[in-house]
Amino acid sequence: MKQSEFLFPKNFRWGTATSSHQVEGGLTNNDWWLAEQTGGYIYQNQGAGQACDWWNRAEQDFDRMAQMNHNAHRLSIEWSRIEPRQGVWDDEALARYREMLVGLRQRGIEPMVTLHHFTNPLWMVEQGGWENEKVIFWFERYTRKVISALGDLADLWCTINEPNVMISQAYTIGRWPPGKQDLNATFRVMLNLARAHAVAYRAIHEMSPAAQVGIATHIMSWRPRRPWLPLDILATNLIGHLFHFLLLDMVTAGIMRIPGRRSSPVPEAAKTLDWLGVNYYQQYRISFNPFAAGTLFMDLCTQAGVLKGPGGWGEIHPRGIFDTLRMMWNHYRLPIFITENGIPDPTDEQRPQFIVTHLSNLWKALQKEVPVLGYYFWSLVDNFEWTEGYDPRFRFGLISVDPETQERRIRPSGLLYAAICQNGGLTRETVEQYTPSLLPELFSA
Ligand code: FCB
Image (cartoon, rainbow, N blue to C red):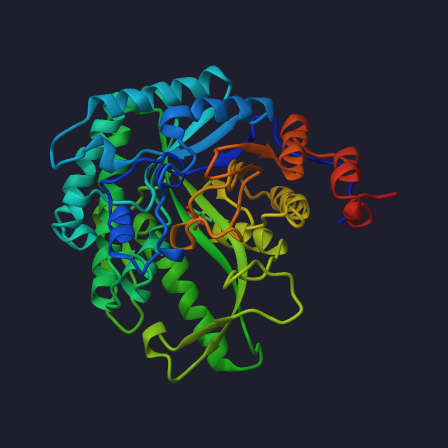
């Protein structure tokens, strides 16, 4: 589909996404810090350390966002700072977040605030974490505290980041703390997360009626490895249901549908989404494996000869963002934000093309009437990447960061994205300057 330009709606939100543990530094009261102490979870047993030192100098990066014409930013609030001990609140921490949100708005950057991005306070983990039903109450109380202190400073609230990733990594596969491989725990946690989201949704609406509340889900492009083999097709559909739809069906339709079990109603969670956040990164091929009971009889792989990320990262598949957006819109009929999209690429060889091809596919979805309201690139700055820690292959930033010296350097992709944000889309001039090889594919002569 060749065009003369790819312009986006006037009020489209353009920005980047970050999370507290990955950028703030100095966090020693949550389960990822505990995982550092335990060892075995993170690349070379590293710790997040000072990360990007946002707790002390986020404003310097906010200046960079403004210079790069961003009008939005998605960041997260750290529960273990706000409530360092059960029922004990840290007003100074809340004041610092206030200062940060005000700082963003003063620079013309609208914050989207995530309440929970993977990390859990130690006091809560010590009592069973997300497996303990009391977490629903704890999460509501935390949400109310945050909204009473910060609710006036943001119109977009994301309750929980990627519950599907947290559940599968921490309770099904066991690569993340608490390192469990337990299907019963998996479904119990899922139910608690859906119910915690729902109480938070209601609390936010009660306290801040104009707020729009959503969840950010990780969506992958999944294909059967052998498209002619019914078992591979079945495995692909099953993982799609478990990973993409099971939790979202609870917070929309109010039903928990676990394959092979009787569906159970979760009426208290129904209709608790105003928008849906989609974190889209990659594509995998799925095959049925009768010997892989621990991964629900499924294997994940990538195809040879296709562009991939490092390590176990999947295939780079820009068309997948279009298919994903249409799939999610057809399923839920909710406005969508791309709450994350990005690529691990320390040399910035792939990132410029990645941005242009994903945005042209996002634009195509807009032409098909999918209501996409904004795009948050992952990430502004290189940061701490969970189990990959500071593995030099896993650099996601538009701006590179030296974790030792905190020195920043804008990458070419950062300049490209700045031009896109300024023009409100992809113009021929921008593509010609940064990704000329894509000109013939995108633009009419
Ligand atoms: C997502 C996470 C985010 C970041 C990116 C690379 O799954 O939400 O924190 O680590 O992957």
